[in-house]
Image (cartoon, rainbow, N blue to C red):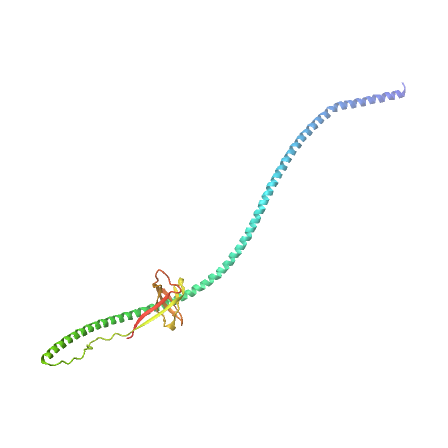
Length: 295
């Protein structure tokens, strides 16, 4: 056998061994590849199912997102309108607040002025009360004088009546005596001389003092009902003085009295007294009547 043949035999033997190894390796690993392919195919199917499930979830989420977007858009529109309305109301309230603040400042000024007016009115009221007290004292003094004068007049009237009755009695007695004298004189043929008339009987009787009547009349020009004060259209130039009491008349109806505490040349001021159901008002007639006995 030649060397070439030996080499070929050796090569063929090595090739056979190598081929056998490859076949054994292929046979040994073929089962593993099939299992891996089946496992991968199962994994792919599982992943496919998961993908479909995820796609359905994504679709549901997209639908939910779309619905939520629509709902949120409507809600956003509603909130936007509400914000606009609230903004309008805020601006309105801001304007109202500014107006209220302005009114508050104005009211504070008015309150300050009213406080000053109240203080001035309190002072005037105090002065008026003082004048009223003085007028009350003067009124009581005048009433006492009037009562005393009235008693004196009544006493004089009583004395005058007594004197009148005595004069009448004496006149009648004188007439009777004259008749008797005439009869007696006729019997003797003589005529009696007429005696002088009796004109006065001595006694304590005195003549009644003359009477002077003072009448004043005007109208109410201004009324301050909350202060119970009024002004009349006549003043000191017409004879009006402090303490005079004027009667307020409306269509022959008595309303009240006005006691004068302040006078000017053409007008006077006073306070209400003895007020009836109605209160005086501008245009009502005021009258003052009194009698003075000149002693």
